[in-house]
Amino acid sequence: MKPLQVGLLGIGTVGSGTFKVLQRNQEEIRHRAGRGIEITMVADLDVARAKAVVGEGVKVVGDAREVIANPQIDIVIELIGGYGVAKTLVLEAIAAGKHVVTANKALLAVHGTEIFAAAHAKGVMVAFEAAVAGGIPIIKALREGLTANSIQWIAGIINGTTNFILSEMRDKGLDFDTVLKEAQRLGYAEADPTFDIEGVDAAHKATLMSAIAFGIPVQFDKAHVEGITKLAAQDIKYAEQLGYRIKLLGITKRSAKGIELRVHPALVPSKRLLANVEGAMNAVVVNGDAVGTTLYYGKGAGSEPTASAVIADLVDITRLHTADTEHRVPHLAFHPEAILANKGDLPIVPMSEVVTSYYLRLRVADEAGVLARVTSLLAEAGISIDAVLQREADEVGGEGSTQTDLIILTHDTREGTLDEVLARVQGLPSVLAPIVRIRKEELS
Ligand SMILES: NC(=O)c1ccc[n+]([C@@H]2O[C@H](COP(=O)([O-])OP(=O)(O)OC[C@H]3O[C@@H](n4cnc5c(N)ncnc54)[C@H](O)[C@@H]3O)[C@@H](O)[C@H]2O)c1
Ligand SMILES: N[C@@H](CCO)C(=O)O
Ligand code: NA
Image 1 (cartoon, helix red, strand yellow):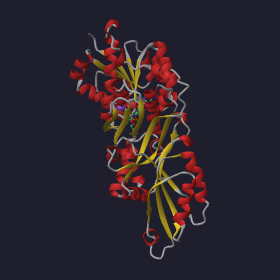
Image 2 (image 1 turned 30 degrees about the horizontal axis):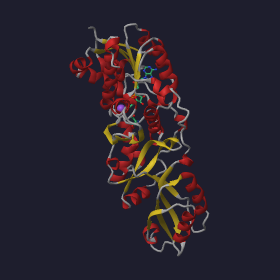
Image 3 (image 1 turned 180 degrees about the vertical axis):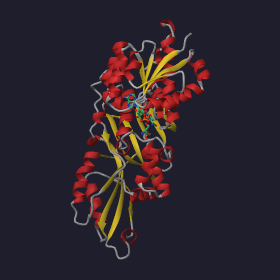
Image 4 (image 1 turned 180 degrees about the horizontal axis):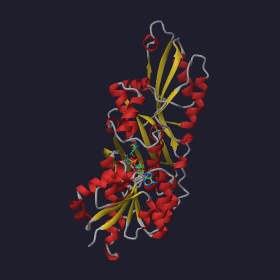
């Protein structure tokens, strides 16, 4: 049978990895897919650079629309990124009856409903394993391996750049900007790195996992998004002293009130596997009612790890595209119906209704009775305390200092309740600076 023809739009970090791995492992991939898969046409604005990657024998053009217009092309891979031209090109490829493979989580988290609906209407597939946790087959795990389960929660380190920054800052004492530059050099960071450091990229990925796990529409606009730019080195240090590590987590969770969808730094007990995921590695923990807790770990960014996921999608689509209707294996397909069916009974829960525990750091006057005043306000609101760490004033502010840090770990509480009581605590004359509050996730 003649090989399936693939058109590649954008041959940068992920695109060049995809081309190389597909070429290097072509025999094995052909056996597994039951048919050859060939990238026969590439579009990139930088035609010379693209030609240098693909060599002779592959047509390179500057205009992506030429690829979409080619009737020989069965599958279009979009590896340009962003919501702009990539959206137009993906919709045009679908309209032309091509299956689409993309690593573009930003595009799908924001415009997924429109794109999946268009694909559904046209009877083509949109596959996006590379969009979430790069090379880790998490989409496949959620869609296939865990399909028997009612998913309870998912929590993951799903942004390599920020995990790399947090690890390097902690282990090597490097400053934020130096480590971010290194993450950019290594090809981990997004074109706009504020997407990484402000939690937006992780929220795009959490949004996609949430839609698949809970059968809800992609709703990035309802996600709570907090990054790592406001984290202070001393909180990383205090957390360690209390037996925790701070990680940027993407969380989506079934609760009595609906679905939680949130990205923020969180204290994770040091003994948890997730706390020990270092550098640009990603890890996702999924809890299902039948299977319990499962963990998926690996490279979430980089050229060939991400290419691994892009090619897995190509193989899935090839198998389906090639099989006759009688032998189709529909579970391999991405089913947009699950996402398109708007389950109105599962709203995204506002943060004020989220229940979790907290790390609080208060800069206070070093005088008798402060701790008692703070804890009595918390107790009045029904917030119980798990642990308290009080620093020596000299250690915190130098010799003769009259200020100290009070660190409190709470038990579970409603966020809205905590907000109200913290406003009162902040008003105490002995509390000298804005209270630092970081959520704590036990992940058990
Ligand atoms: N880099 C990673 O580790 C990684 C991991 C997972 C997902 N992704 C996603 O993969 C996508 C690509 O990321 P990347 O890191 O390879 O980006 P990149 O910037 O390295 O590559 C993008 C390529 O697209 C080309 N391009 C831009 N506009 C174009 C247009 N109009 N027509 C044709 N080509 C055009 C650029 O010249 C460039 O070669 C993004 O959506 C990104 O979020 C990246
Ligand atoms: N910028 C992303 C790339 C992978 O999606 C990261 O750092 O994880
Ligand atoms: Na993946």
